[in-house]
Image (cartoon, rainbow, N blue to C red; front, side):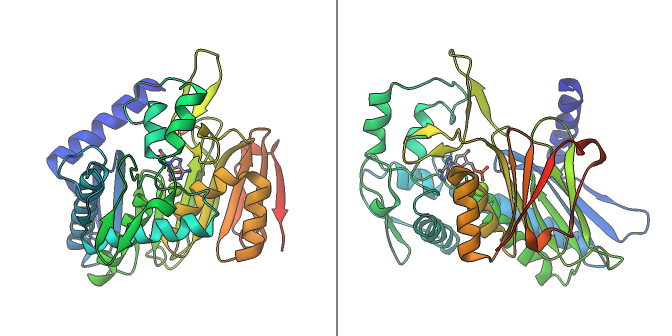
Length: 343
Ligand code: AMP
Ligand code: MG
């Protein structure tokens, strides 16, 4: 499997370097494959204006990546994180995504925590040199964590010394919305964007039927099930996406519980969110994962403006009632128990 992945990655890289677009025989489908925001992305659009649309969507995403990177010294987020408490002027996009992240942090009771970066760094998730920090190190770092410490006034962002932003949990979703917008502006009515597993559907398939969106199997390769959907975003957060095995033999995932500073370990292995907007789906996938099954159910019952598929490590699947009829479990997942969350 590793070899296949390596080959596929190789193909992704060569396409990215070639800046390649592929065209189907009918001349109706255009696709770009590229590496952006730390992941492989594929954008497919249909119809006369598809070529221009996919190129512009790719450019839009790469522009946002440059503004938000936590490692690129010229990015606005890097500059804010290293500003030593001085204000930094943001672009309108960066202002919007930061403002949205702060809004969702508040709405989710701090489960989404855009200032989690120092803790994430201590666990080595930013460098892939993972380690288990000492409890007092985590406690000290947690003093610099808290979205309430961020001040955004117009386009001016001020972070107190030691406070650092990480848009990892919402950026791809916002970028998906922005890219879908660019595609629609080109007159395209049918497109599918796959931003490293964050799916954004524009309209329906060219034949007028719903898109068939695969929901990743959190226990291994391939897909666990399939969702029929159109004009929406489907975003998944999973413990399998990035994790390390500590010296104690335990698995530690890249999503941190901001209350404790420790990687989430609440019995969930993945949460998929279906929402109108990518940024909402992305923010909720991460924060519902942090909240755990009960907390996520409660949040859904209170808001009900999104749908959710949550999978536990015991193999139970919880699906909100709004997508009960659109979601089908794959043939080899018959041993998993499907529960419907109702209001
Ligand atoms: P996602 O894949 O959308 O769930 O986002 C996960 C990423 O968001 C992680 O790799 C971190 O960069 C960041 N992150 C981790 N924990 C949190 C949290 N509680 N709130 C916000 N961002 C987080
Ligand atoms: Mg997310």
